[in-house]
Length: 249
Image: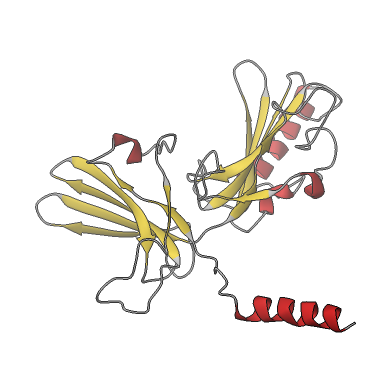
């Protein structure tokens, strides 16, 4: 029994006194004048992500750690420049809303957009890559959170870096209500919302008749939902379509 007691005490000692590696935010670190892939649309295929602890501390900010990522977009004499790095000061977005960036215009045709955001985790999957007969991404069945792991949008695992999540649904032609036809779902991180807002869904129909729906949200793992709320624009469009169909009957 004494041996077991010593082992337990030694284990507790190691757990308590061994230095633990804390978590920190990871951000892309690049500038477009050195690497054109740093521009928008952003291409991270050959860029490395930086653990902000490795960036060190600023001389004028001793003891302050980076807690956000930042993206700076400058237009100087008609030329756009992009910078991505860790951020030590400020707050995410404007007033805590990461959808908005700080913009400044100066003399001599100079414009600057300053965006700060924190890391967000999103589910990343596609029904196109699911094995035959398997529906892990939730194209036909309810999305199973236990079979999918949310990834950090600013990590190397993310196919697309971003500050919010998105879910894309595409469905075969002939009809707007799912009735067993071909359907696919994509869930991933996103950096640009076509609608300019998050927390809503928008839909449309491609020229080939395929119905599409895109949903954006800005909370951890929020793209796990099977149905996000439609935007007012989508609701009005749907009601208008129903009215037209009834009128034509």
